Amino acid sequence: MFTITLIWGYAWVMMKASLNFMGPFTYSSFRFGTGTITMFIILFIFKIGFPDKKYWKHLFINGLLQTAAVFLLVMFAMKFVDAGKSSVLLYSMPIWSSFLAVKFLGEKLNLPKFVGLLLGLIGLIFIVGWDLFMISDLNVIIGELLIISAAICWAFANIYYRIHLIELPQIQVSTIQMFFGTVIIILFTIQNEWGEPIIFNLESIYYILFTGIFASALCFTVWFIIISKIDIATATISTLLVPVFGLLFSSLLLGEKLTPGILSGSLLIITGIIIATKKKRSIKKRLEDTANSESPKL
Image (cartoon, rainbow, N blue to C red; front, side, top):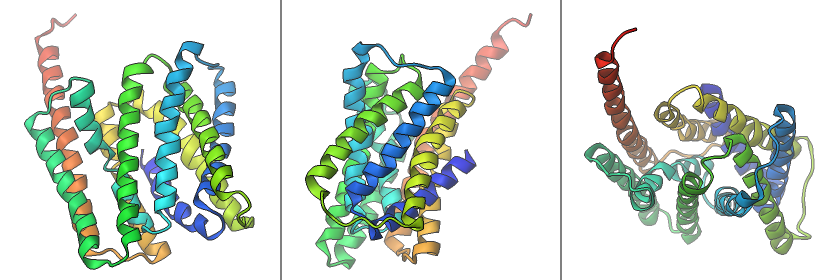
């Protein structure tokens, strides 16, 4: 888990730096094209095969939400928004997922979850509000709102997966939805960035290969293996290290400034998600322990 979150946090620096060599949509096409090819190789190695045709419509919609919409919005917004701040805003996804789960999955919004979500929303207001008053560039504010929109798209993708695709192997879902998302990104790139300059050198190719093979394909494959071994709550809490590493690496490698708004907002968001997920896990664990203590020992 630590290695995965470290790679995902470092990937934000590469995503931002790649804009020095090509357009945001062009980079996304190369990145997810590389990731998709790698995922198909993984499917072949594990002999998983393809899902039934009845799932393809749902996989297309999931790919539209989870890969295409999220990264088209994020990469365009990163032309104006710092990498570290972008990672924090996108990883507000658990907040929106929790709200949507109440609406579409019938989950209950208990007190710990409500408090956690409230802290997370206040954190978002801290980050965007600070920039609204301290930064005169409207593009930064619009970029931040686009990344929050991407987080909401990611949350919708999670809910859609739970409703329509939960029966399929997770690696299979990740591969096919990434394929559909990549096709959409490529078509969008052709329409909007065709003919724009692309600089291929060791640095830009490194960004594409690292984020495509490691951050997109291999990390997601290992992620699915991990969540089959440990509980989801622990894994979800661990992903909070991603924006932490994103802020750290972007500050050290890109020289981005950590303003009071970013630091306080990030702390509130991360604290809120921990409260909303950790408490629920503790209650579930106590119930399991109680049930185990009451069962007869054979």
